[in-house]
Image (cartoon, rainbow over all chains, first blue to last red; front, side):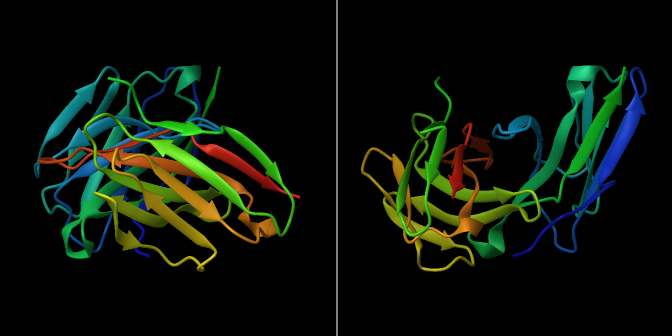
Length: 112
Length: 113
């Protein structure tokens, strides 16, 4: 099925650094969701975006809904060791019965 | 509000057996989706149930089936297990109206020996 293109695939950063990742699609989305998944656990919703151009923060996390509706960005400021995990973008597509599609994930490693 | 719950959390089966996984969505959510997650394939959509009816289906063989009960709880069944069915199976429930947002359970780790 359709997958969202997420980049980078993996990141290795020093504690305290800022992180940026993005998600792109060839189709328009009306909702963008960002999740974090720890090994062996289910994804946890971090931020939900519902409007083009919307910028939403959740603590050190900030996400933006791209103006074209075909992309979204997630930034993490001042990373800490517990930020380690896999980050996924996702969104429902109305032309497929609102089925949700997921990015391929960005694996984040924070070096203390 | 309680989150999405899945049972069991871990399961070990042998090839040829069948397995049933259970999912209870967030109270008030009538849509339940199932996903298979493996290291090489990422999150793969299995199917979605809404009000006891299958609404969407992914590209999985007929050995994978599901159902939903009137209380919105859902079960997923895999028959004639194969080694390649070893994966984390995730259930997600979606809010009933307005802005669609999906919430995941902790998953069931299935190992097929």
